[in-house]
Length: 241
Ligand SMILES: NC(=O)c1ccc[n+]([C@@H]2O[C@H](COP(=O)([O-])OP(=O)(O)OC[C@H]3O[C@@H](n4cnc5c(N)ncnc54)[C@H](OP(=O)(O)O)[C@@H]3O)[C@@H](O)[C@H]2O)c1
Image (tube, rainbow, N blue to C red; front, side, top):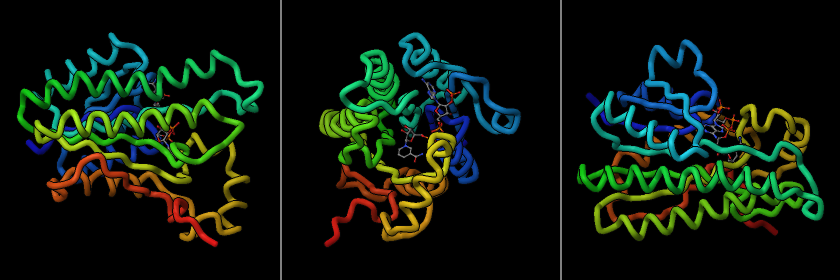
């Protein structure tokens, strides 16, 4: 059996792209999502219906993955949501902030705690957090998303330091504008921004772009690095004059 990956939010979008790619590369793959995964996913992956915001569901996701595959070599904290409504910072509601912090930050934080303990017992493992260019880029109409992702970036550093003595690297992948359901609602806006040159590489990112970065990190080819940020954003992060 190849390495075992647990990917949260693996039923659609970026997580699905990662799951498909790792499966092709010989990984045994477990995915989570709130809704039931489709038949094509069920044929390849262990599909676990689990809400990452629920402590009970997170524990069950780990237990079911271990029961099926015996270990977890790679955790990909991918599940994440955008605000239901893009509201101005001065009007954004407390409920929306709480929902995003629950799903995008508390969920991955405590799932990582669970899986890290397992990886320490195993003596190996790799953790990859899917953050966003919103970790450091201000959007005043979705401030709660930015804050949740900035928190996830700090979480990467915290766990990277804590787990270094156990030989478990923790990395962060910062996607740019990626074509998924999440961005489909603002497609016209991003089409225009990309055409206008907001990214040096003038195209939409695809889930497979993120998948390749996750796979590269899974190969243990950066043995003296942890806490690293990999921007997969077409060069968006480069400041230009
Ligand atoms: N698309 C982009 O341009 C972009 C850019 C930067 C960062 N990101 C980040 O990349 C990650 C994936 O985004 P995406 O664009 O692929 O989003 P997506 O197309 O909306 O897919 C989200 C996935 O996460 C699952 N999910 C959502 N909430 C969940 C929860 N509470 N528990 C378990 N699973 C949950 C969804 O399934 P269910 O709905 O069935 O639960 C789905 O499988 C997110 O963290 C997002 O913030 C995306």
